[in-house]
Amino acid sequence: MENKVNFKNFWYIACQSKELSKDKPIARTILDEWIVLFRDSDGNPVAFQDRCVHRNYQLSKGAVKDGCLRCPYHGWTFDKEGSVVNIPAEGPNQKKLSTRSAQKYECIEQDDFIFVRLENNPEMETKPYSMPHYKESGYKTVRLFNIFKNNVTNCAENYVDVPHTVFVHDEIFRVSRQEKVEATCKRINGSVEIDYRNETNNLGWFSWFLNPKGGEIVHKDFFHMPNVTSVEYIFSPGREFHITSQTVPVDDTTSWVYTDLTFKFGAWNFLAAPIVKYQGQSVIDQDIVVLENQMKVIEKYGTDFSNSKADIVHVFIESIREEIEKGADPRLLKNREQEFEFWV
Image 1: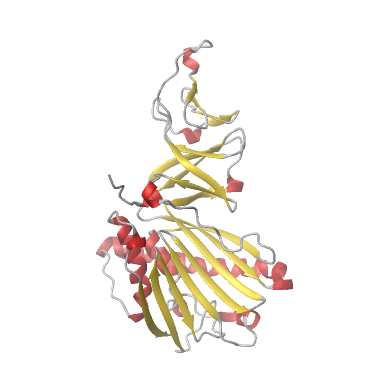
Image 2 (image 1 turned 135 degrees about the vertical axis):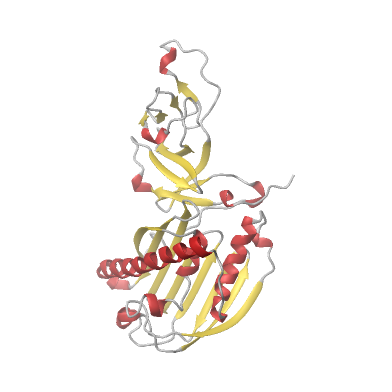
């Protein structure tokens, strides 16, 4: 029997590696599912449903002892596989423990993130997305975390939406000049690729550093199903800037977003880090306000969008997400390519 595709088949960031110690569990919510994370005796991350099978108490409020997770209500203790290894009320000579186990989820540590997958669909085998150039020689990464009051689709579309930047991020990121930009948008294999042309130095007050000669910039944006966006700027062989965001669906109206600002500025890498962090967070702060307001309007009036030519990017992203909602594999969608132009 064919397994239907759903959003639980994909990997999502649950936390940063540094957030999960060996002696204390932490709680997270992904796709409205309560999750508890802890480290086993070998230091490997483990993820369970955040519910004790005994009397329904949150395991995340418990403790980690010898690599096992202990519920604070009656002390039931679970090993890394979710099996019950101790029931204090049964006394010191326990012979037959509960055959019930904690609901376990797949868990992987990668790029100093801990990823969780709620359901393994063999027909939709996926891997956690690798952050571009993370810890690669010559590159520096500034890592940001933010909470957005909106869903994954709207967040992802915002991150690769160029026209809004001259209004929401006026002067910080771009200035309205009414310059023509041409682009090619492709939908292929569950991803959307946008290749922009005719961009030079309209990058706000940081342009003098990023592209002092004003040459044409290589600018490409990507969306990878179901929740990753990546923005790539190449200014010259020695100057690159990558903005990668993984948007985690907490519920229908809240998303946790982990963003890597990865750059290659040569000898300027160290000095540029605090500037990049400030600039990046300033832009994100403005997007948080915009997306929260958008969700308020959607909650009152529903989703009824009107599209311009540049919104083909949104249409392609939505088509991929809608396939997953229907239980279908977006990689089977027909490849599409469309040229478009807009002014900023």
